[in-house]
Length: 532
Image (cartoon, rainbow, N blue to C red; front, side, top):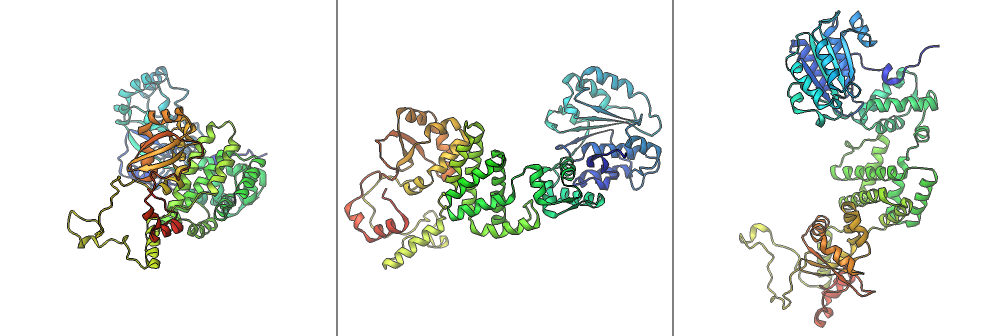
């Protein structure tokens, strides 16, 4: 019976062109080989499964190959075969995690004195080099700086920040990048064709996305689904095999939000949990869903969306139903939910509550829409508009503010930084940001609501002195979060309010004459304006 070899080993690159997504590294190494400008030490850093060790082996084969072709190993000579099979005396692969002590490095220093057995270079590949101890790194310094001419060091690491600067300065460093989903899908497609496996495009992209930038991880998942499904693999089978939330679920959430169907949201949560899906995985997928919509809405293109062509077309059509402001709010809201789920004793209850709240969130109103509404009100009332500003170039320098022929108002109170109506409608968004940054503070202030706005001061209705004291202790933090959410500075002050006091309580009673003015009446009726 033929021995089975996993895809990651069977289809390991044999020449530099086969390395996926790292052209900036392979091109430089090939040019160095062609021009004879090979360094004595290289450091390869990057995420897992992106080709660091594979490239190190290719470089080791290339420098020892008896008949290289355009700086690539021919993979036919005895030296290349020995390195491929892992039995070459001239290439030593060392695991930095299990050989991390100073004694191992001292032994290495002794062995570098001996020349290669067959090839032209003795190559030392140390994987996960950041695992070496401080003493081991110090023992390596002198040898690394002035090694014998026949020695080549190649280090690989996933945590470059743990490698001492003294080592970095003695190596040529190459940073391997995370492999794009499209590149992984393309490589898997060629492997599937060679293995005579039929797999559709959506399924390929799903496996590639689950690889999360690692070709090796994606190849392992490919082996898993082929073992389950055989030589014909479909998108639905992969969802079942890997227990992945279907992308359609996230589009269902979008539909529920447009229809403001809270009941449907609860039914969806129940369905997800009944099928055993992980709550955090669902939330992260939903955040990516709104990220894709935001990218399409902002750029007008699907180039940055990591999905198949079918789903890219759906995102392009779906983005028309949302505004940038709303999509940003959804992202922040879900980030807070995901953070809270980690510490929640009842994650289902939290998910259900936040799903209902997400579906019922009010749309964010743009400033242009408000001004257009005011213009329309003035037109209907037959009065001149005071919201339109003259062009800046027609105004004197240093006094660029709208002209106002009316007498100054008797009310000398400072102008509020944010209207109470907007503050009330977006207060939950503010609390979500508090939860994301200080979950303990959010648990204390969850039941608060804005009471009145006076200049840059916001009075917040609390239920107890404990809440008031908490706000006073964290005043600077709350002010910073307030400015992040509303875009204006303000100082929050907690007050113990009587039961039943609402967020719409005015700071002071307006004058009767203002209440009777038709513009004020229209603003209240059409835009929900409140006196300040």
